[in-house]
Amino acid sequence: MTDSNCLFCKIIAGEIPSAKVYENEYVYAFKDINPQAPVHILVIPREHITSAAVINSDNSVWVSRCYEAIAEIAKQENLVGGFRVVSNAGADAGQTVFHLHFHILAGERLSDHMA
Ligand code: 5GP
Ligand code: ZN
Picture 1 (cartoon, rainbow, N blue to C red):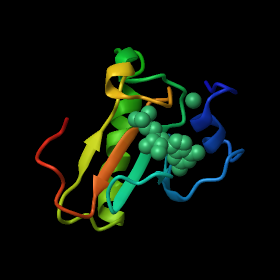
Picture 2: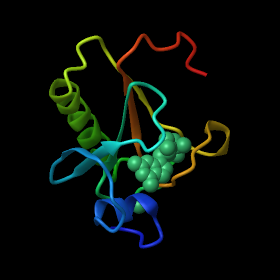
Picture 3: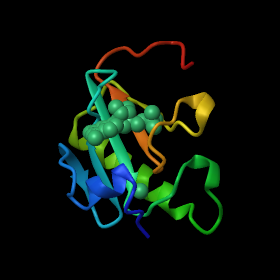
């Protein structure tokens, strides 16, 4: 399912340009437009799911698919020093796009503070 008003559904559809990093049947990954680390990649499922707050036993396979892609991307992008995965859900976390996404942050020693 897609949502015609959703920015990330439009990116998946190619209606809004993005810098593709990786894609497969289930997942699309692209560079964040406002990077917060030397490597900042967004990994999104092709299914419109609003956030981590609505994951359940019917849709959690999309989370697995994203994490399988994350491991592939880490190899492809040679993130040998490590990486951090972040998924903001809701107002207190500062979620701005309501299509489930995982930030991959890497390329430098990341902050010891996660919040
Ligand atoms: P959130 O704050 O919801 O966790 O993350 C949304 C992310 O999407 C932000 O890091 C923001 O920079 C990124 N973003 C917003 N609009 C666009 C866009 O049009 N293209 C790309 N590549 N990234 C975007
Ligand atoms: Zn969407």
